Structure formats: structure tokens, C-alpha cells
Image (tube, rainbow, N blue to C red):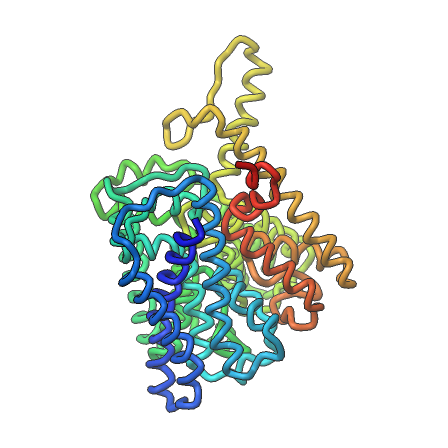
Length: 481
């Protein structure tokens, strides 16, 4: 088992290393030659190990047990976070390895919570690397590996099921490698389209790629301290980022169906209907409530639309300090922390489909009270769901709320007030990024004690991998033969 784990980890890290050549190009373009070793040293080591593993390993299919799958996925995510932290450590702008690792974990899990007081001190190439981490982690590094390296001889479906999000997981094409490749190509196409649009609005290619990475990856890292607020007078940029945040929060399988002409699959999707209804209802509702605050409907709806899209898709961008909003508007925004994006999207969170399942089950319970002898099932996309679907979602809620409560308690041990601790806990587990009060959108996580940063790292990875993939290691049954 350990040979298989190390083989895949080395290969995954070598793939991540290849993508680090994008910030290398940015460093050359910007004349940041002193930053080149920060990327090229880990790049060379990882590529050498990856090629050695591929060249010397036996070319025979690898059969993975259930335990192998969970070990590989968890180890792979921890290893890429370690790799991502190496350039950050080498650049010398982070006070400790703990801070660099936190920044890397927050990047790859698309959380977007930063420990940096001053982002502007980093070279532009390093900030591009931070944003690219969102993009790589958004669609999933295991899915990328399966798409690019089917020659590894590993059955990828179980790995992708363990990494991906949602309650229903399947294949779009007969081969899982083709499915992964299709989704990644769609993801790449969306990214390039957004980057081109941002360039038309006046951004250079580095900023355009960085914000496209952060937006489609639903992460939230920015190139400067001001972030997108620096473009406050360019409403077009705000609109483009809002649109692509909303697109990033939709199940990417639906884009494949649409391009394949299978519009019926898209039209009947229960989660998509709920996602769009919640999104636009909150945008309009908060916008109306903010009219007295901003003095005009146009300005109120502008800030409401952007921040609702940002929080619900767990991107975490901010163009205004929403903690200054009236309490009723902040409450509605806070409610979005419990929802999240769609399954199969780059967004984090609880996932809309789970709320759909619970809402349908609640309706069934009411109908059962009225018709005691009736038979009612939860139907998704017009079809009956699995019989154990409600039990699965209920168990997830229990695990989810338990981890949120423990993480919030950890925050209080670090002298955070209850409000800050709870919202920070939701932000970490849901991979949102900004929270409220002491950890709001204009504040960073750098002042927290080291031990809490490490706990938050655990919470972010657990949240990105849908909790069970990490928590299963704490069950005695996993370690029994």
C-alpha cells in the first residue's frame, strides 16, 4: 500500500510542479528574477521524483482497497499543500513555516483566508501562485491526475468519488479519465474566457489570470491588499467576476450536458433550480434592505449581488466591508454560510443538494401525517433518490455540526469572542475565507496562535474533502484488518 501511496503522491506533486511554470513565466515577464529559485527548486525536485517513479515503477494495473483510496486522497491533498508552501517559505515573506502552510492549505482548499497583513510585499509572481492554487484545488487535483495520467494503471473512479463533492457521483462518459478530462477542459475554457474579458476591461494578463483563477476556483485570493475593490470604478470587472462566481458554483456536469445537447438533463436538475432560486432571492432581498444604507437601488443591488455570489459560492471576494451593513442584511449574508454551492462545482459549503433533500423529506413527513398509509419518496431530478439518501444527509449534518462546534470552541480558547469563533469555524469548514467581526473581510488570520492555525488547516482540508475522508482515520474500525 505504501508504495502505491508514494508513487501517486510523487506523480501528483510533479503535475502541480508543472503548473508552477505559469508564475515562473510571470516572474520573467515582471523582471522578478530573484523569485525564480523559489519556484524552480521545488519544481526540479518534484519533477525528478515524479519521472523516476513513472520510469521505474511496474506498468501493471493497481487494485485499490477502500482503505487505500482514503489514504491516497488524504495524503495527496496534504502533500500538495506542503508543496505549495515551499515557494512561499523560500520567498522569505512569511514569518514561519506554519504561516506558509496555512496560506497554502487555504489556497488549495479554495478557502482564501490569508495570514498576510500586506499582500503587496509579495512579488506579483508569488501572488499569481497563490491564486493559481485556488484554480488547481477547485476542480480537484485527483481528477486532474486521473485525466492526465491514466497510464498509472490506477482505477480512478473510486479516487474521484472520494475527492469530489455531493451526494450523487457518477460518470459522464464510459471512462472516468475521459470524464475528468472533459470537466477540466470545460474549466480551462471558462478560465480563459474570463481572463480575456478582464483583459478587455484593462487588466494586464497577470492580473486577469490571477482573478480568473480565484473566481473560477471560488477561492478569493487577490493580487493586492485592495483586491477587487481597487477596481471599484470599473463596474464591468465586478459584473464579470460576479457572473463567473455564479458559474463556478454550478455543477460542471450540467455544462457538459448543455454542450452535448442534453438540455432536458439541465432543465430537470433539482439542485440547479434551488441554487439559482436561493442565489437570486438573496441578491434581491438584501439589495432591497440595503437601499436606505446606500441611498439608491442600483448601488444597493450592485453590492448585494456581488457579496451574495461571493459568500454563497464560498469565493470570499469583497469590495466593501459587509460587517458595516445593518444587522438584518448581515444576518441574511450570514445565513449563506450554511448553504454553499452545488455538488460537482468548485464551490465549498454544505451543498445545495443536501438542503433540497432535507426540504423534500420535510414535505414528505407532513404528507405522511396527512396520509398515514401513503408511500412517499424523495425525488431528485424527477427520479426517486436512493433509499438511504436522507440517512446519508442526516449523518453528514451531525458530523458537520460537530466539527463546526469543536472548531468554534477551539477559537474561543484562543480568546476569540463567540461570534467571531462561530463564523470563523463555519468559514474554515465551509471553505469560505472571510468571517465576521474580528475575522471579517478587511482582517487577516495572522494574529491567531500557531496551534489554532494548524487546527484551522485540519478543518479546511476536512471541509474540502467532505469531512468523512479525513475523519475516517479517527475511527478504530479503519485501523482493524
